[in-house]
Amino acid sequence: MRLENSFIGVRGVGEATEQRLWQRGVTRWADYDPAVARDCRGVGATTADRIESFVDEAPERLDDRDAAFFDQRLPSSERWRLYEDFRDEAAFFDIETTGLDEHRDSVTTVSVHRDGETRTLVNGGGTQPDHEPLTRERLDDALDAPLLVTFNGIRFDQPFLETSLGWSTEAPHLDLMYPCKRLGLDGGLKRIEQDVGIDRDRPDISGRDAVRLWREYQGGDESSLETLVSYNREDTVNLRRLMDLVGERLHDEVFVAARDGGK
Image (cartoon, rainbow, N blue to C red; front, side, top):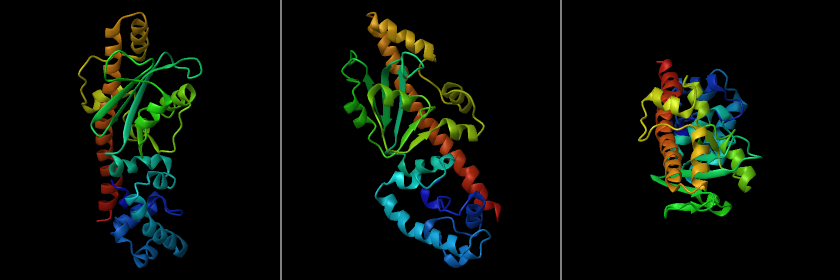
């Protein structure tokens, strides 16, 4: 589903009104007709004017790649609608840590997958040429994207990075855990991957294993770091695969079903 299908970001337009617009043939910004809108239940003159103002401004904002403009207007539950338009620029990221408390524990690795490439930042610099030192500056560069995508990152990854590295961002943060729940996909990332048929190259390791691997690396076992990095990187790649699938399912459930429901 593309942003151009969305009217729910306009004040006064809820899910039911948006669906009625779709069913009347107003499925894109370019289709907007004030006369049709005013004849649609739930759209009065004031709301019709707001929609008209929005569809006049929105295409230019999208051309400017201003994801924040749309994020500020969409309900948080509809943030997934940003994905189709920003998928090629989105940064999928995942962190590993020494524990669960951002005030007591440390970030060990951060992997960022974007446009087919994956970067890994390692606390202390790592041991391989493709390991980058985990610094605020490198993190800012890696996550300089119009859209960030994680799984449970709003409650875990982002607070850790903010506390440990002083990192902050104005970019919209799409936490894939919530769109998954909307589709009835519950549990952790690995469980959901299994449920939807996404395979992994290596056996699953748990968060506890990730802590153990880091401690083994600190004790001199460089192979443990390679295992940890490989696991961390695969998380980010699979986030892209899962988001593609979830986006398609939500498009069908939210847009296609509602659009065709009036036919």
